[in-house]
Image 1 (cartoon, one colour):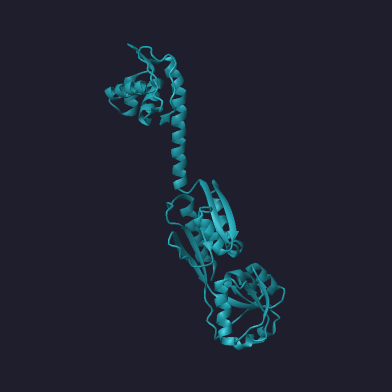
Image 2 (cartoon, helix red, strand yellow):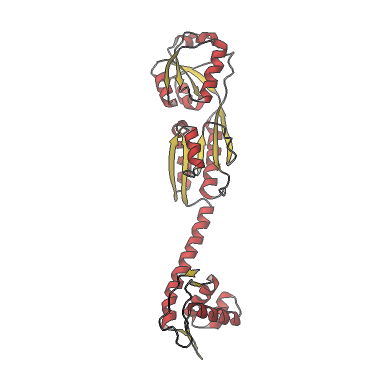
Amino acid sequence: MLLPGRSCPGAGRTGERPIPEGGIRLDLTDLRIFRAVAESGSFSRAAQLLFLAQPTVSHRMATLERETGTQLFTRTGRGVHLTPAGALFLGYARAGLDSIDQGRRSIAQYLLGRSGSLALGCAASAATHILPQVLRGYIASHPNVDVRVRTGRSLEVLALLTARQVDVALVRLEVQQVELTAEVVLREPVCLVAPPDHPLTRHKEPLRASSLQGASLLTYYRESDFWAQVYGAAEQVAGPIHRAMELDSLDAVRSMALAGLGLAFLPYSTVQADIAEGRLARLQITDVALPDRVTAIARRSDTPFVGPVAEIWTEIARSYGQSVG
């Protein structure tokens, strides 16, 4: 512990000296011994309380007096008493030791994941459909962790992670950056859905891709490589498909499909409830191999994997493993 340099009042008197301009260096053990001696009024009792030899206590207090530049104790045959300077110093020693002890307890709680803060970056679609279930359980079991969530497109969220603006990223792509540690937590099918009254839902048998010709397709924004793969896989077999509308949000694509405006390729988790409750119908296509939708979590490799980061990582992996059938 380093205290700033100052001149001790009365410097130059017997037993006192100026404090060096660079400050004084205090050992935490010396401060704990000083507090024990001051509170017990005895070097021998302080030694017993701290499981130290009495000469060690005496030596350490002599060192502390040299470092502080003044006499801290008056020694008598009946024990020791604080000098006025020692009484003044005791208040600071107690405050400093209490603060350090509280800091150690706080670190212990942080390492267990029970306190601290957590900045989570999340792809917008994941934030809408699965993250609420993850955070409901996490916040219930970690009420003293301050959680902040930032959303955006997957590449934007990864940029926040590399810029150290979030601690963990939940994205809809496989992460390749060497400075990041990542884990794929979910691979889910992409499915073709239609309004329940669409003509294609009347077919009893699975459809062939050629059935999509002439149908109105609601598409995700074309700058996305993943969705280009989805539409490319369909058009490679079926030929050009009429794109009725392009949208920049999966939720918007789903909403338009629910409104009866066309067919849509969507991740299963996005429309799982709609299919189960009859708001959308799932169409089976036999001759198109659609790529899986990937969900991954990522963190910076140079950051210790402890505390809230490790806890939310475990919670996300567990929740995503149970979320999609």
